[in-house]
Image 1 (cartoon, rainbow, N blue to C red):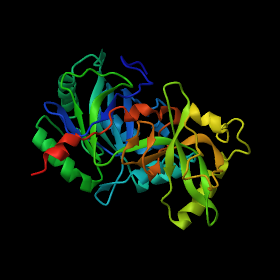
Image 2 (image 1 turned 180 degrees about the vertical axis):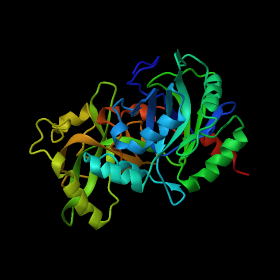
Image 3 (image 1 turned 30 degrees about the vertical axis):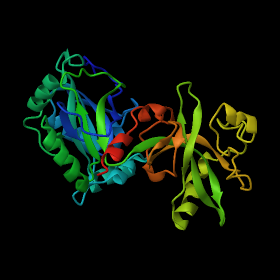
Length: 356
């Protein structure tokens, strides 16, 4: 493979904002696996947002892309699976499996599609420094004759249409709108786009769990985010599970269970003084003085997406986070506070001003 933009490529990212900003390029926010597609003749490679290859997990897409993309190109987009007229993220996660036979069985049972929304290279030209509006025009022409399962992401510059999409597309499993400045150049791994979601979510690391009061099942998952110094900080818990699910989680997490705390990022949790300089589980308070704050340490290797209301002092979830799904496409190290750098705010003066 010899392209003007070579793998690995880390895709450009988006930060959360409260409202759809004006005077931009708008697209729906797809609920799938972000993927960079590299094609050089017969060679096809699918790169994940972490730079690792996804190619072996989507053999049906490799053939489809070979027949529908320009001979030499690099495209940014989303791998999705539709089921019963809605996007099905769980069907995607099933693909991340070591057995090739299972992957190929699922490729026939629930085939994936690729939704393209950016063009990074075409023929011998890198487009990384080309404004978005021109990249989009080239992308539309490149895919003018493409058909399913390869799609050009719908786009508009009309904010009223974007607002309509935000309201309507949720019913199809999409989770918001992405807004991009028209002159935006493509910058890897930088949060230069804007996302407006129906609820705030974060990808966090599961680093332990507490047992349920009723027995040896999971009571709550202990969640963490990495700070600017690379330290894993405790940010809260996720605890709303059925009793059946609590028992299943014990089995799922058993391979990550640690026999002691010495090599765990939160090894000092039992030292009251350690809580003064780090955010650790089991912090003493007037609410927890009589509670058993012990917990089961896990190797911090699994990532989960949770929904939350807001952050307290920008440091931890104010309330219990709501489990949404496992994220096998994310690495623990990518779960940082950077996801939360644009907190959704509301001006208190607007509430006071609304009084008659």
